[in-house]
Image (tube, rainbow, N blue to C red):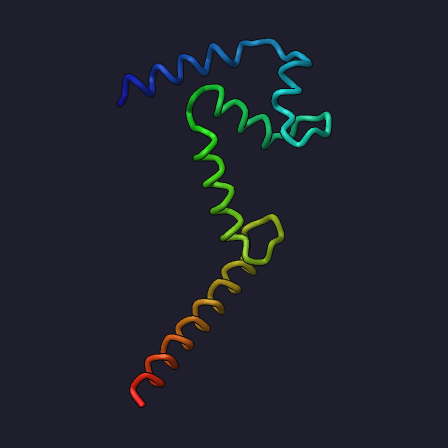
Length: 103
């Protein structure tokens, strides 16, 4: 495992040295706006260095969307509060269902 990680880091340092070309910018520009955001660059490089695969990135994006309960594009106190309210409601519904089943 250590040797595999070391090989990936060596590959990464080689990839870092590649010139920035219009072709590479087009490959990185996943939303097609003609510019490469920090997010696009980091995701592209992680994929290129074989540190993650697209499935892993998709799973992380899905996790973020789930955690971003307020749909603000950020994780913050509001998301924690929304999640807490949802959990309380779910628990109340579960308790009500259990009580209704006892009748």
